[in-house]
Length: 132
Image (cartoon, rainbow, N blue to C red; front, side, top):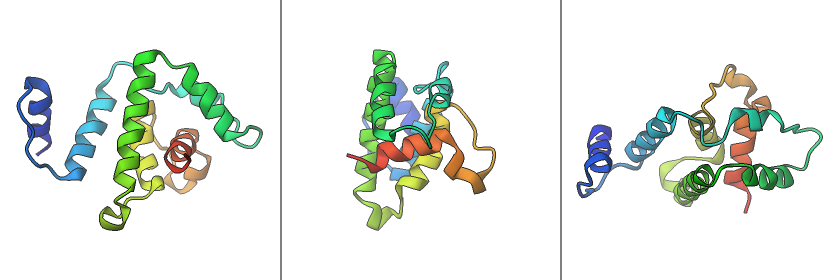
């Protein structure tokens, strides 16, 4: 299914109905394949979670992104928030999506799943998914 989605994107072929998880996986693969991360990990490193207001930091970080990265990030967050509206059916949570998409959007890898609460890309993305 993922290869069919990719073909639709590459050729302009009309989409049929696809499973949400397949669309999400196609999006993750696309984001991971980009030459530059949508949200640079260097920007994440400037986040000091114990010392800063997360909402204020996120606003400032967004303003530092190039316009194309900003738009891609906002569209992706909007898509993920739409997915979360159906969490009773799809069993997805902000934490699950932040885990899956933080590595794709920021092109970093989670080194220790047990310590997600200290992984800055995860914390930042979870905040974007959980706040208004």
